[in-house]
Length: 516
Picture 1 (cartoon, helix red, strand yellow):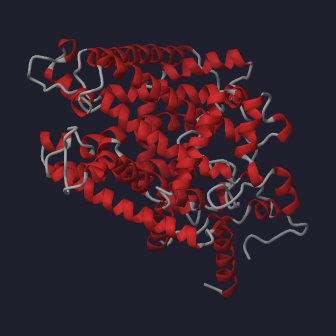
Picture 2 (cartoon, rainbow, N blue to C red; picture 1 turned 30 degrees about the horizontal axis):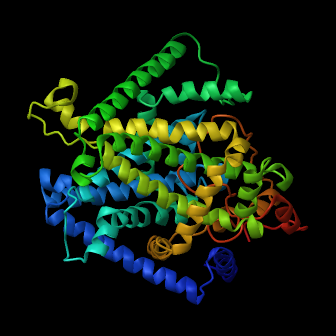
């Protein structure tokens, strides 16, 4: 590598790397210690038979499945950050240096495939999190390992902080941090391509297709057309599409009926893990947590949408203005804090929802839900029905609503409450160790920042490879991870997001050679 290339590399690193302060080092240290303790705790639960899969199969099966699920979840989360950031970039800039990334992009950016991928990916996240819950979460309220004192047991086992830290740091935030800045390197492998195909296959199956009906309803209600890169469906394509919508509605209805029936009859893990919670309270808690998750999913869509607006247009009510003032305080420094706190809250909610909805019915016991076959009951025990309901009701619907009505989300008072709560969670530094893991991962896999390969947005524009513009529209799905910045730019993960005016002011007057 030449001296010029090394200098460029160091310059890009300086623009992204977090500056270490004593408080930052403290947060990193205690977060990594919490992660190590959480890993030991989860493994101990498995090998004492205190998780569902360990008890039903074996501790080694639970450990292997958990490792595979966490690795796959990390790819799902990181890949999303890459694929939503790369569409504006001219693929000719990386097709030779990153051939598999180019193959990923050629597939994902064809027609409306990116929306299809995001739809399938959302279901994958929920299903994989539920599987991790089966592998590592305690099933008994009296589960006790490592001879922990009662107060520590309450925090890490009963509340579930151990599984939350374990999943957020290992399965989500670490790869999101790297993939947001190293998009090209992160998906330059066939594991990413395989994950892309799986997500698109799930979407093609039609399981989530009732979301498209919701998309059309919200588009009509908001008056915003649904932009598409494909011709309108006609003939058999039209029939096949709406046939899958009807099938999806039937699957959603059946899945919801399974959850409500099981909760009323006390046939879920909620009755085992939290025996003092009544069946009626469990049903209320399920829908309440769906609303909390939905609000957080919608809030990130609304926040990124209004970030592009002038400050005077971001909030039209008292709480809307307070939300924007807090969110964009100091040129946007609270936006990354919200994203991290949001991730913690969503994962915590998912694990509680998994306990509420996971079936506690042994196939062959004659107590199968709705009298289904033993094979069908064993399939439901994996959490498929819960993933369907949670993905549609608690995630995609709210994302679509926020896309159609972002200002309404900002004006809602509870949005401000959730923003404050998310910022408090981020301030605690519970998952600050993700940045340490991300740095280790980046060094080990030799990732480079994207601008090393394709330059900054200003450099690309100066060399006749300006980023493409993409119109905003109702119904786009961008939830579940970090986004909102251009490839090669300074962004929410490592400092304040610049306003458009600030970006314009920093744009160099003289063209910069991206190949330098």
